[in-house]
Image (cartoon, rainbow, N blue to C red; front, side, top):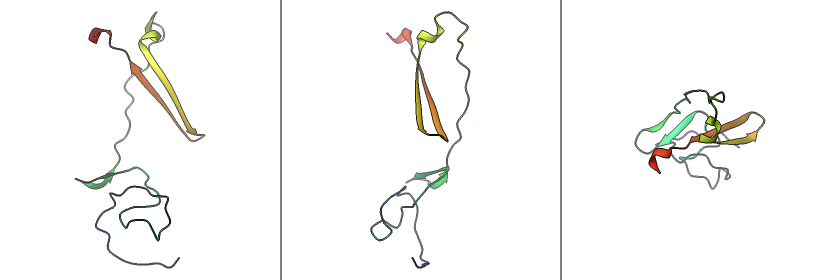
Length: 89
């Protein structure tokens, strides 16, 4: 593919796996650590924050949490933790 130079207004179209010929100008092949926004344009993605460890030493503490593991591939793994709020029931 030949190199082309042209102006692009923004990259808020996100990631597309379509061939270059049919992909919109505001889409890209890959987007690492970036967040496309209509209001702010392409900005740096906010980092994650470690809030706390689950207290497994407290009796019954593990019953208050729902834990779901997401293994996308060997280098990308996530843990989703949801704590129940019995006061809302």
